[in-house]
Image 1 (tube, rainbow, N blue to C red):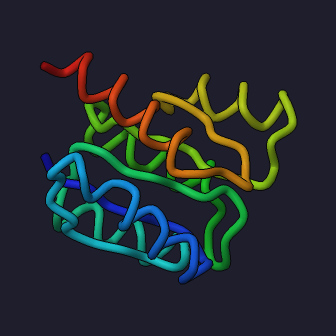
Image 2: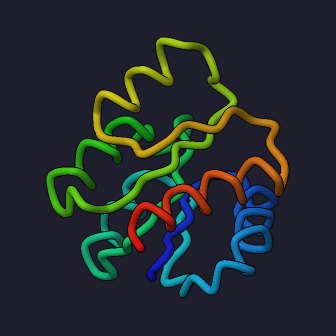
Length: 121
């Protein structure tokens, strides 16, 4: 399955890449801002995407709207420091598969990926 990682923090992008490696996902693209994310999404059409909310150019919720309009079957995991209930609910209502608050560890991301991948099997 194809994975795309979107976060304005290079450290977070690298951590997600490292944590997701054991799931044998094919990392097809990474982006540090929302506008680039949408353009790369159109090219690669990933099956799974991790998505930050607070980013330059275009916020994560706007990216989520665009992604769901292009390929609604994509499993989007929103990972954000904005972990209040209204942000999480908004992301889930827009089509996100799950929401993880920052900071997060390998255990949390692995559990979410295992659940999402298990539901596709």
